[in-house]
Image (cartoon, rainbow, N blue to C red):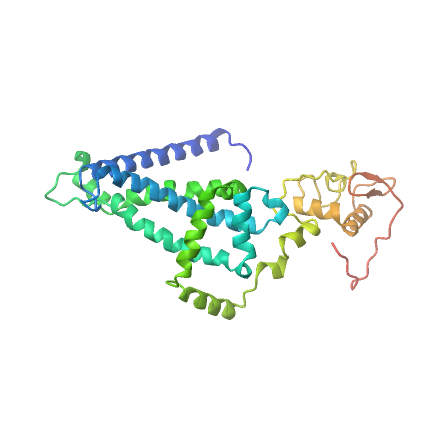
Amino acid sequence: EGPKSGLSFLFFWIRVLFSFVLLGASLTVTMAALFEGKTTMWDAVPKVWSVVLFFGLMSVVGMLEGMQIAFFAMAKMSEEERGNNSWALRTCDILYNRRNGMNLPGFMIGRQLCVVSCFFIVARVATQNVTAEQENVLGIPDEVQSFLNLGFQGALITTILGSITWQLVADQFPIAFLSTPITYILLRICLFLEGTGICNGAWVLAAIHARIAGFQRDEVYIGTAEERRARGRKDDSQREIAIAALSGFAGINLPGFSSNAPKSLRELADTDPEVAQYINTLENKGAAPSSQPVAYDGNSASVADPMPTNYNDDEEVDC
């Protein structure tokens, strides 16, 4: 997506401002209700400790939300791409090398148990319990108080501060997200919770579902990260390749091709000589006239001898 401008830019920031206003209002009424003793938090817990538990446990939930995003992103990388941070390497070793790779789904089970446990306390702080005999929080109207008693503000706070924000960061910086001892410790806790067997019935139900649906691992279809890299199909590659063939063969416009061709196709032409050779033949099949065909060698376009362009209907062409 390109830079925003005009009305799209204005509309984007209006929505951002609207979100921040809702978040600020939700935090305000939640903290006010907490210190007025109008939440479902236990009376024996001091108000300050309630605040600490609220934001602390939301941070734990956020870390767990981000960890699942980062773990699946790292699963698509080869070992060389995972960096050399000791904590990241330890985490990856546990996830992908032990128990035949079953620690990753095991983490998902333990993660869910940990998240649910944290929300037992977070929900008590964020849920208001104002009866008709009590004064409303911050003197707001009865209709608004009745709405807040439903817990909307708590859902908004936990969604933004305890989930989406962390997921967005982890999606963009998975290696950095794993390069911390906090991730390693939380992984160990989640695997311990999974090891208690509380939710082990999920393994059986998942296996039944997979058998009925005929699911297979992604590696069956696309190969491992190392295999994809060996074929020149590196995941999430930031490498842009200037391929003359797909940007006009030095001024010759190919039918159906342009400089906006998909990056995966440009990479394939760059790494597979047969694909580049086949693309060269398109010039003789209806491209703009040229005095001589132009050959592509993976880096630049140059004049080459004409190549046969007639294929039998049953002839297979690899591209």
